[in-house]
Image (cartoon, rainbow, N blue to C red; front, side, top):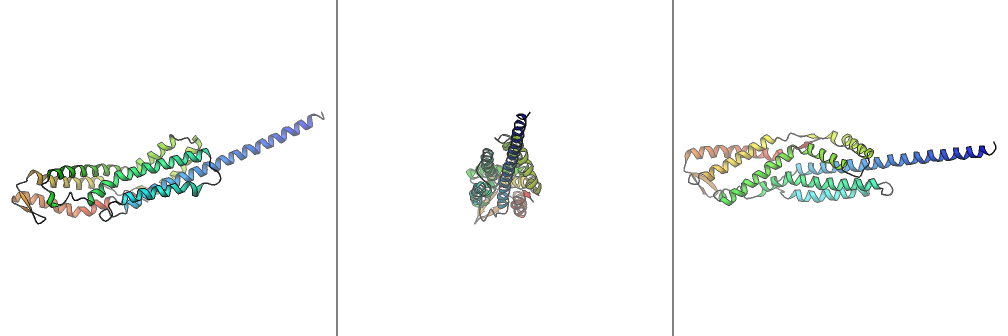
Length: 268
């Protein structure tokens, strides 16, 4: 019996040590999941902040701003791992950094899709009166208007597409199921719950673009009905004059609203 007591004591010591080791491991994993979740939530929020910077831009004054903002977003995201890592890197941390980098590139690509056509439309000389009779300019104008239509589609579904991209990147990552779930919940709670689709109206954008297309197509289809004199239109055809003049007034009054649409894609 005396030999059994030391054995029991040893088993108890090992059990206690094992329990402490298991608790330490569980606590460490919980801390790592918290770090991963926080990094990814900050990364997601950074992309949305970048969108807000783009929304507030005056595209006629700074048409190349989307290029500058791409670099600023990459720089801000690249600093997050250094700022947020507590301790030594671990495998899921690197997986989270990879997700963050991919999400940032996807966000920049989506932002270019939305804002580059608007910037081009704001800065280009395609809309100058002197170029109304140039058929090559007409084709370029058609392409520009089509790209803005694509831009409007992307803007209209931005938040939904962004959330789907985050979910897809998490589901196809090297994170454990627990870490994916924790990150998804953290992102939803601290980021997406504070944002919603804004007052962006694809219908209003499409109406403006349709008027633009109709305006220039009328002039192209009636080359003998008008002349360009000193940067202004002079009409021979009174019916054409009334129709084009009405369209032009509608375009001038709705232009400010058209550019304001891109300021309200997402709101907080």
